[in-house]
Image (cartoon, rainbow, N blue to C red; front, side):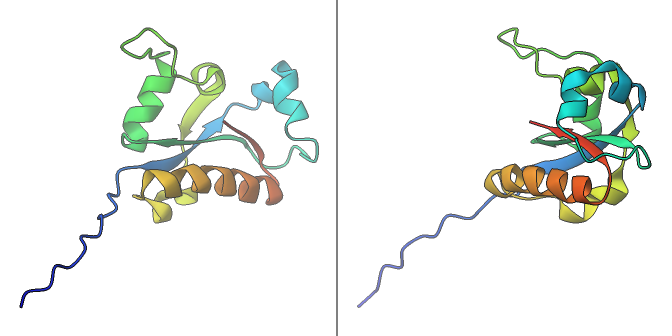
Length: 124
């Protein structure tokens, strides 16, 4: 007699989180950025935290160029497009790759963790 074992879905590790350092000008130039970081003391850099199914390097390039989707929707963050300087792999590389569900949660958790450590952070 053969038993039929239920097939478990293998979770694919297709997503990454990433952190971009932003120019400090974002702090003085953008009211919404300041309002999102009321406890920021100005000591550490300003950051953007995101998640992607691309590599962090590919996604960063798309932000900088104001990339649009095939349907014409802008998919780049205005903060990274205007103020993005470079990726900060030391703040995210140990987490990658992961499932989409995990990346969605990790994006928020990482942003909040960095904010608690004194960074000004934007994520969406």
